[in-house]
Image 1 (cartoon, helix red, strand yellow):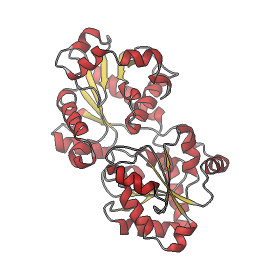
Image 2: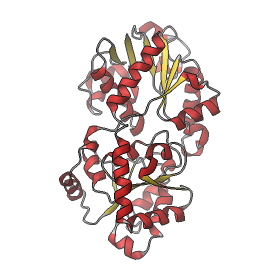
Image 3: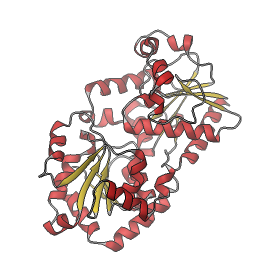
Image 4: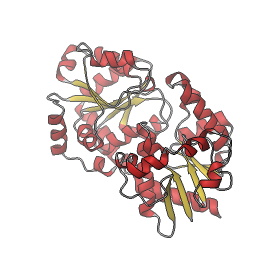
Length: 370
């Protein structure tokens, strides 16, 4: 069996899908024995890809050839003419014109463009809806990254649940291997001298940063002087006011900007509490990372977040800063509860590994081949 994975997200800036495709592809390559997994449009084994290496030299040039853009946006079956000879072609959300002569599969990451369209650019909303019509409805099989995403796709798009396999993504190994020393190194590198509450994610409307800042400001002054609110993540879209607020000396928060992936395990492990008040997530990978690192969670009571966090989190209404503030205050003042949630998270995180994800994915493809 030969499977081509659409690796175009490796060339993009979007953090979540890019991380998923990179780790999923590498894990599939590791666990596949008699099967061959190739990255399209690179079409060569790529165990040594990194996010940076994948966008230089040959791969960058090939992926940006004009015919690839033409294939994506035209109605012509160009991928049938120039695409790989494979048993399955697995599409990403960026592929809008898939091959027609190859069995087609795809990953459903979330349904945010239907449920919270105001948190996306009009271009993203349009692209997601075109992807649904041209790829999702045509696919022989689909992978959803959570039960929540599957259920939303069934309800919104009218898909049969029998076509959709729920396969959780994984958490990178370094998050399971954190030590007090790596947390100290990260704190020293970023100048974090006080205990901190951490958020990791792109600074964009869906992540609900303004509500987080308002909630932290509602904490008693004694807690705000003892604990620091730290945010790490690249700037997204439609966020000039939020970014200006974060960068203001009066924000009450430390904004670190983009943090390299090698620093995230230590930074995460050093947090007293991890807070993630997103309005919607298909999975919410930072939650899994914090659980693996042994950090208690506060997250939203909507979409996939209760499913992913389980009994490792306090759940709140993300549109209520006062409820979020109350949860932060409760957890910061309760070492015993923090320890309980952290231990629950360590246990739960064991189900989120890339090896498990890859093995279940190969079984998914083999099942379709029968």
